[in-house]
Length: 60
Image (tube, rainbow, N blue to C red; front, side, top):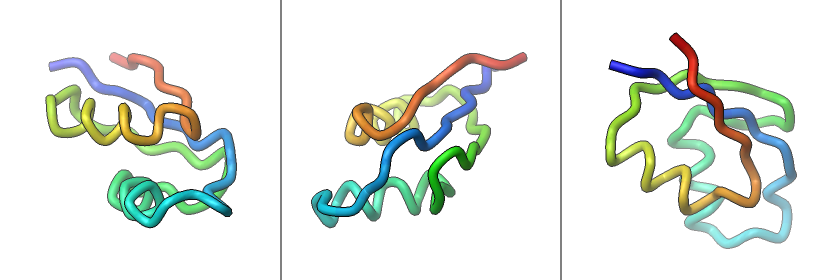
């Protein structure tokens, strides 16, 4: 199964609480911090919620 590397690119300051919670659930706390997750529908939904704050790339 493919993996996704999610990197936080923008600050969550001023964002909504659900966006803060989603970033924390993805394992991101600081700008330029990355986390690798399995490509599953649940993870894709979380990425969609914070798409303006993160960048995503596929890794093998």
